[in-house]
Image (cartoon, rainbow, N blue to C red):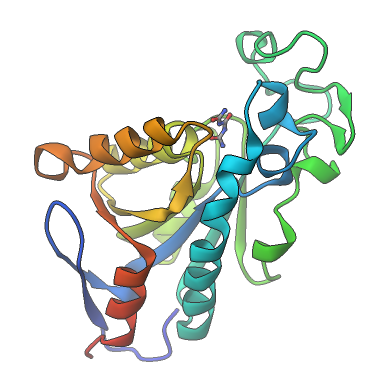
Length: 232
Ligand code: TIU
């Protein structure tokens, strides 16, 4: 993806330790920055959550997205959601949440968590460009029942900069799936958010504890700095 055919290395100041990344084999993976989670009237709110807790992640992700676009890094966006006939939505998932408004029910942004509805779309600030990959996923993890592995293999990706919402649900699930598949994951601390600040904090701790049992944690400034000071 990068213009140069040579590898371009950067060292990201991260926990539990710095990580050296070859940007040519690194992708920015933005998890579920959808109106259904970020805005009132969507899936997140129907589960009883205060959706304003997630807004803090938008700017840091925007800065990383700009840097990725400027340097030609592969960008992958994901969206959680289901087919209109709910054939990919297990009853065990649909049955949860407020009985008045469940997955597939009509809400102010269209049917809750259904592909093609306004609420399912990515927020305007982080809207994908036509040349960026968008993965539709029925589960919390971005690898389960999706083409993500094929896409990453096609582009020779070995490292993932992971951000999005929510830290302890779809970000953590995806990082765990990625770790088992051999990807190095750097989770962006200020580029993730949770409806529960304490879960955000613990979700990041779970990733970087035990010598980085699932991956690394770095803030967006550290990644941006490493991208600026890369050597070829
Ligand atoms: N409820 C919650 O925290 N998250 C989700 O349901 N999905 C994602 O994290 N994307």
